[in-house]
Every structure is written in structure tokens, then in C-alpha cells.
Length: 432
Image (cartoon, rainbow, N blue to C red):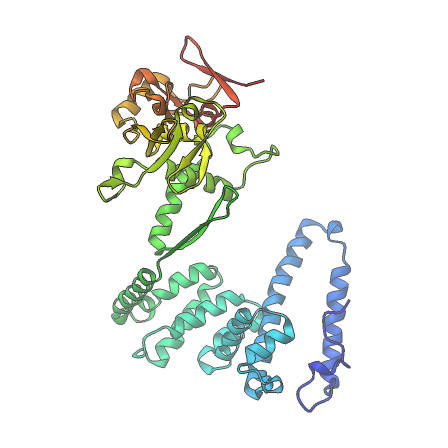
């Protein structure tokens, strides 16, 4: 079915003009629609690889050329103030309603369209119309040239745009954006360094002012959040999480999801964030009122010793006792044991992580995860207390062992029994 509006659809005509006022335009649009219909009717499965590549390349170039026509059309509509037909304040609002695009998307495209109509960006407009430039590349080049300081003359701006257009043949929009920030180093070195510094200072100032963090609990055992941080902080966090999510640190079983398929990177990065938070050294955490940022878990003596129990956190939420005992191995947990009258009878000290020297010793002794058959190396393991710290177990080599994250969870899962063998290897079996 044709995607081009029918000629008798009056809502697509300019104010005061009947639809199909131009026979030439109507004929061209019918031919365009016919070619697209014929191409869609082609059985792609019957094509050889070279033809699939040819079609993809041609469709990519055609999308740029169509985008160029779209930009020219919306720029013309803007110059004629066609949005006045519905009382729209801006052309993009009128266009968004007609095209069912979002207002933000239509606004971005309208800004690009009006920029390409100026003589300053003639080279970009011509390359986009020829299909040799992508829309995002065009937008990046226009923004880079427009961002040049006012003292840069027209000839230098033209040269900068020409260089960026030429580089677009080898670089995508993301790379062009970075190049655009330093384009003056190429076309005007005498002002380039000063300009780059001012751009970076502005970016850093904007990033610092825009730092944001929001987090909420959905009441179903999950927390959701968003954050905005400076780019270098985001890169640091991503690098840390990628290191924790590295498949080399995990067994094949840990890399598979519940259906047996490979976990996508987003999930592995999420699991890495969980590990990152749970294993953050308590002695590195800041103090508030003389106390480190800790989690206080309240439970009765029966809950502490029981296999099927829950524990109360100091923010009013609950977790299983097994989860609390697992976290106590490597996170900042203070157990508060209550008597029958709910009075604290034992306020434990904050859980002390195994020291660096102890971790090295455990690595030398265990060689990696002590679960039989697991090949996770020592660097990818947690230090686990055989006699749980939450039950008075000591943080020493005799009471410690290395377990990978998956087997560490099993060690604290009441549904599994852990057996320690004479060779210090452990096995897990689901309880019946």
C-alpha cells in the first residue's frame, strides 16, 4: 500500500490550494511510490550476497536523498508559515502533528532543515542531497561549524566545513563530533588550542551542573534508577563494570540465563553493578555521624539460626536470612540479635572483609573457586566464611575459602546443602 498521501486528500494541500495542483509533482510521486512498491516485492531471499549489499547501499544512500528532500520541504513550509493553518507556534509542531513524529524529533529535523537552507552550509546540503552524507553526519557538521567562535571569519568556516565533509567518507557521526571539536587545529591552528580549551571548560561546567541521581523501589524486590554524570566518570564506571562482567571471570553456567541462552551484555553489566556495590570495601566508605555507610540487619536469634527466615533492614525492607549471611561475608553488615522482648542482646561489629594478604593466601591455597568442577580463577572469586560471620565465625584463613559469585550464592541459599570434602573442595546438592 502506498505511503504517499492520496492526491485527493485535501489535508495535505497548502492553504488555499487544491491537492494535486502540480501534475508534474503528482507524476513524480507516483513513479517514486511505484519503484518502492516494486523493490518491496523483490524476494530478498533469492538474491546473491552481492545484490543484498548493493540493495543495502542503495537504500542507505536513498534515505539520505529522501531526508534532503524532507529538509528542503520543511524549510519551505517554515518560510511560508504553513503552521499558521492550525495556529501552531512553530513549524515543527504543525509538522509533528501531520507526520505523527514526536515534537522533539520534528524540532531537531526542522532546525537542520533551516540551517541547510543557508549559504553557509551549502556543501553539507549538496552532499546530503547526493546521498553521500548521512543525516546525523550532516547535523554534526552543521553544529560543529556553527559552534566556532564569532571571531572565525567566513573563509575559515567554509574551509572547516569542507574538511569535515571530506572526512565524513571515513568517519561516522560520533567520530566526526570529536573531530569537529578540534577542527580549528587543522584550518586555523593559531586559534584552535584556545577554542578547544573554552569548549572543554564549557562542557565540564555543564556536566558538573547537570549531575543527577534518582532511585526508587518498586515494592517487588527491585530498584530502578537513572543518573547523569560527567563523561569521564561514566567511562570509568563502565570500565569497572566491564572488568567485573568479563566472561573470563565466570563459568559457562554463570553466563547462561534461566532459559539456557547467553545472557545479554546489559544483564551481565547489571549483575556486575550488583557485585560492585556489594563488594565495595567498608573501610573506604565515608562516615556519617561517626559510622560508615553500613546496612543494619535486625533478626531474632531463631531467625539467625534458622534456614527459612527473613531479616529486617534498617530502612524497613526485608531480605532472606541467607541473603543477609551471604552479604555479611563481603559487605558492611551489622547484625543486631533481639531477645523475645525485641531488645538487642548482641550488637555485632561491622563485618570485616578478608585483608589483601589473606586474599592472596587464599588464592595460593585454593587456586580459585573451591566448588568441585568450577574453573573460576582466584581473581573472580569472593572470600567466603565457612562458619558464617553472622554466627560468630572468624575472618581467618582456617574459616575462609574462595567461591565464585554463583557458588557463593548457593552457599547461602537455604535450598542447597554444601558438603566440604577432605581435599577442601565443596559440592552442592538441592535439599529434598
